Length: 156
View 1 (cartoon, rainbow, N blue to C red):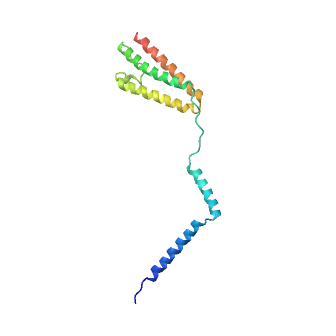
View 2 (cartoon, rainbow, N blue to C red):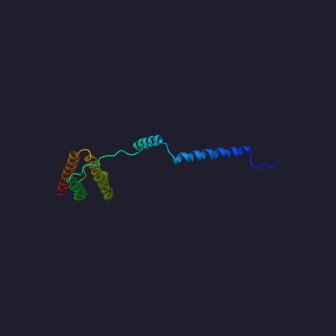
């Protein structure tokens, strides 16, 4: 006796075909209640995974850019005035800078990092309090102005 298909494989084939037709039928005519629940699910997933919408940051006060530029210029003047005063016999009185006075590249890098850090802090502060950011930069400029004039006086 010759068999063309075993009973187990024939039943598996019927089972697979039955499920695939049912899945195709669901794709063709979706249930409206399923669509509503799917839309609600998508909305809740969107709320869960999307970042919150934040308001645009406040515009930068017009005085901050010139204050940033003047602070950078004062840092360069501090480098020059310090080197000039030390050549004329003055000594560095800032204990944090004493180790860097002999190395111009290290002192320049330290001044650049400090300037960038202060500007970054002022930018962060300005998003919360514009007046405080302006006050920070005005105070920093005043302090550096005093340091530069003091260095040039010591060089005389």
